[in-house]
Image (cartoon, rainbow, N blue to C red):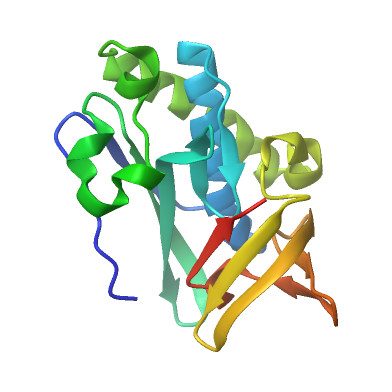
Length: 200
């Protein structure tokens, strides 16, 4: 979508190559990755982050981490998925330029630099646990809904067809977001949007 990605020195960046036996529900993995990042940050630092649907991790409403996924196919069957995780750690958010006012870093929040290897291990442990549960068909969205800050908020949804201001009512177990406007109620998939913004 023509977006720029910022990966300053001092951040934690990982690509996880997954070859799941389960072939349905792959669209949930970015959300599961974001939940794992949030859980790892909480376990390592004591800070309580939230997940902004579909794949951002925030602290006090500012983005501290993001997740992106790319699937590979053998003919029409998914063969693997690469999950990219990025966490703003040991640098100041002001170095992020025009997006600084919407962003934070763990160093900003803690006031000190942190041991990135410990955070990495906490995130991987959390992801391993959640990924195994997903593989067994556990309803993770229902189980972790309290971590998703978007539910119940007024949001701005940016799509190719235009901008919609609505209320985020719920997140379904398949990872879709239920939104309500004055005229309608619908569900959104992550791939249907360019960006969302929580506004109240």
